[in-house]
Image (cartoon, rainbow, N blue to C red):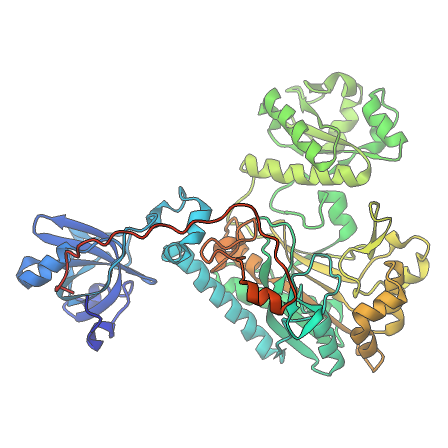
Length: 616
């Protein structure tokens, strides 16, 4: 097979998505992959594809016997170049599903640039192809228009972010990838070093400390499209390595950061033909938890939590009255039209709720009369029907689902339940985008297992001054000056006003049971920097992968990352993580304990005769 490809074959005049009826009679050169092949007993048709679209190409026997014979050997995913003449298909043969559907190209010259073995899956079979297989052959999967479009939209979104921040005077600064291990909420990925046998680098979970030090250094406005690494359990919106837009500002308030973020997201959404509100609603953490049971509420549907503790406190139904007497709460959500749910379905919800710490899930339905309940726990609460129906606004045919437990469990169960039912009952408009700022998060929460307080965001977040003075004895009542941007129930980013004095930073460390010695060992460089005139500063990080996923309404961030990891943290294409040789381990003073079993290399494939020898 010759590799002597004429330069003219690579000089495309158009992409495969550009030609229109106005190009009739032009001589053009196209390059791309064979999408499909059809031999109509003489005339050969192919769909030629590149990242911009598809053009139908026709090979007629009159174009020459050798060319036509070569065309009849073409197969899916071969890479070719054709030069030919654009011709109208005519109204009766136009394909309105293609942008190029009004025309076709009659090939005069065909050059095969490369052949392809039969691909492991067809591009239109990705819904039925396992993700592991698609990731193993990611270079095939990327040829799908949807996957290709996602990566191009990611580029457009990233550019939009840069454009806004460049115009606002932010400076793009790179921060180190080889850092010191510091506690930031997840496990670090550690990197051994040949040059330091008794120490490890850590890959950054975020550039948090470096961007704060950049503010101390007078950079004033910083941003970075930053790579971050966290060794944590994976899910659809989480990867061990991910990308975020990192922002930090000196002499800034919460509103300054939120306004900047709004402008970034307004430009991002415009690039995706999505509207962004002129003013984004702001809700405190406490209100979000009270109304929606979540600090990242989805506002595209109702089913808000309703507290009925006062109504049932003296009820004869011991499950409810007992929860209130023990210091807990009783709350419910109203599921519109939920009376059509079967006993099997509601029993299934009770079992599901146990996965979130509940003992079960009580339900009942509003009778057609509208003034009583039926089924479920109806007989226990019908004496309270009038007050419950008035409080909840429930209507005939609605279902009420109740939680009775400590506040934390009830809010979590009902908060998750409203989202689950909204998805399953098609209550969500897939074209809707509901944005929200959530503010005033708790500064600390108590980790019962560890027996100490932990930072809800991170230990560099500033508290409200009035709360710091008032709640020294009750740290969980302190509010932090933190804020998250939410879209459709997903946290897309978050940030805070930072602590900028060494005294306050040490005091917060003490609340977190980080001793002066431990703080000095892990954060000495930050504490030292804060001594030398650190300005008040604030920042935020937007998860770029999540932003793209939400903008394109995709179910997983793996669909917007070129080379993602599986939920087990592996790369099927490169077989990472992989084994390194003994010499490398010795240099690092490491020893690998091998797993049982061994891998066998696949047998070599027998060579087959080349039917196109001499023709390419």
